[in-house]
Amino acid sequence: MNKPLYFIMTLVLIPFFNACNTKKQNSKNSNQSTTESSYLGQKPPGLTPRPFAPGIVTTEGWEVSGVFTPDLKEFYFIREGEEEEQEFVVIQHKNNQCQESVISPRVGTPFIAPDGKTMHLGKCYKERTESGDWSEVKSLGFPFKDLPIMRLTASAKGTYFFDEFKSDFTGDIRYSRFVDGKYEEPKLLSKKINSGKSFHPFIAPDESYLIFDGKREGGYGDSDIYISFKQQDGSWGEVINLGDKINTETWEAVASVTPDGKYLFFNRNMGSKDYENVDVFWVSAQIIEELRPKF
Image 1 (cartoon, rainbow, N blue to C red):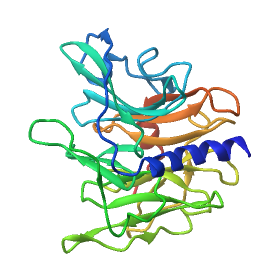
Image 2: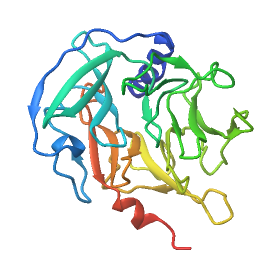
Image 3: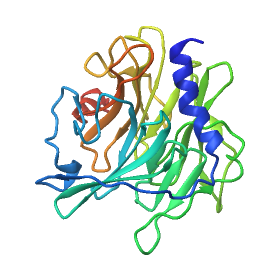
Image 4: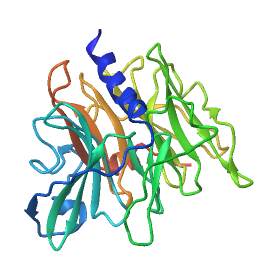
């Protein structure tokens, strides 16, 4: 099987096998001294992407899908563990230290809602409890439970944007609004967005732009990261490649912007076609502002 296709299958199928019933398992902790609480004490990047938190998050192994909570003190991501099984990890900043915990085997692709109250995990989710912990994993239910979702993100209005991975290795992005107390039947975005291979959407909190990845004509490599800005009439604008500072001849994907809007996070394959070394990168979100149209 083609290695890139196998890698995508790994991203999508493992959450399906784990379903929505994985409970919290044993944790392990390691402490790293830091001097700042935000971004795990890391020095922010400029317009050139850098690996995020080397030795803490980014290693010579496989780490993907990193997201922060709104207070920027909890960082959730997925990595390949010692037994080559994908595990769900959080690094929390407490008392000027980074504390790592393995939450569970992987369940979906994490995304924290803008209000910080919900952690989306594909077609599953967790809720923040009054004690500050997360609830057990729950299913989103109808109309999402039977859809092959890899990643689901939500705007501040609660509108869901998610991908639909298909058996022929193509994928489309859909959205669903919360109307009259329930989510409407998901609708396809326009053909500007859905070229046949469109994955891992990130919707801006104010819905002013949509970031996603895929392999499109004129791209730099295996998978590139793209953006589309919402136009004044409410339609989506032309798809823009984020450029050669972000995209290379290898695989870049699963992008998101930090809750404060300052930094873009994404993944890049730093290894071979076997994807044994995938890293989390970050870069100033000014690159988005430089592409934003001036109406």
